[in-house]
Length: 117
Image (cartoon, rainbow, N blue to C red; front, side, top):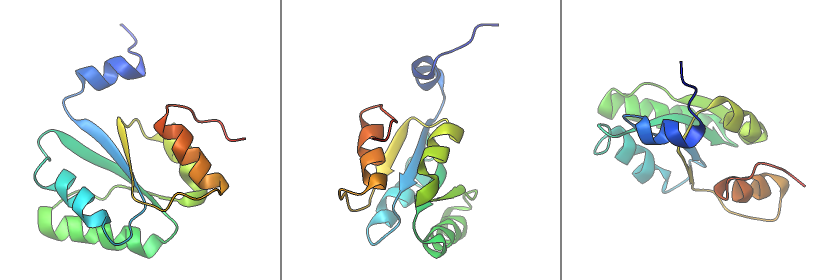
């Protein structure tokens, strides 16, 4: 059996796997696009947000409109756990970027780095 590294898994995967960080005002356009128009080529595996109610609402709306399965939920304090557990290709970040520790992790993640100073 051949072990695939992360990049090879992305190339060979049938669907691009997304996680979404931040589920505020404009987040719906991203998760509806994955659940609807791009569902043949994409899947949304996890939400990460400060507010669990927003994640639950987003999951309910996706279920009602597209009969989409509920993604995993992670609080912002679980961002690194999400990185470890979810085998995703892309991270959609719809959250304010500030100088706090969480945002620093997100910025580093976008560069393919996961260390927190």
